[in-house]
Amino acid sequence: MKEKDLTCLFRNWLKANWKSSAAFELKICKTNSFNLKRIAEHQISNLNLVHHGLFFWKLADLGLQNAFDCFTLYREEANLVIFFYKPRQPKIFYMIPIETIEQIINNGDKSISEFVAAKIAYKIGTLC
Image (cartoon, rainbow, N blue to C red; front, side, top):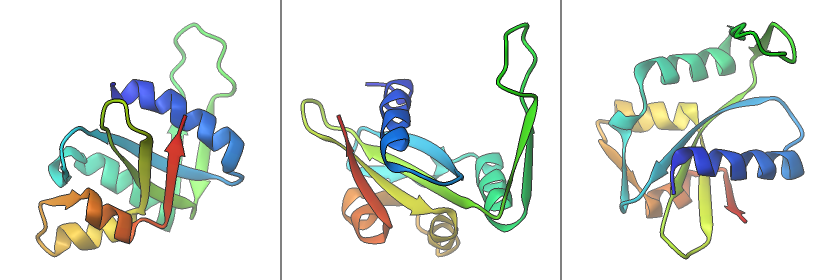
């Protein structure tokens, strides 16, 4: 299972369950603990911009038919979504707000266990 596989499943979950604008950074973890260094600095900055300011993104013109040219997100939800993947078991994700992730990083923590993720996530879901 790769992150791109979970992205497709998560998109389907969003279509069925999510009814507002938001930004999500998806990460897959195949161990018992998610290393916080796997979140790139630009991802944290952009999620913060979505949540606290105005995020603008221009879609690349690659000769394809894009839905539109650009979009903005203004003070919307911004979340890290961690999948603790275990083969042949339900695909559970933990949705954690970017502010919570930043607090954990600022506290000096280097990782998040699935147990901790379950405690701090504001949304927990299962993908089919």
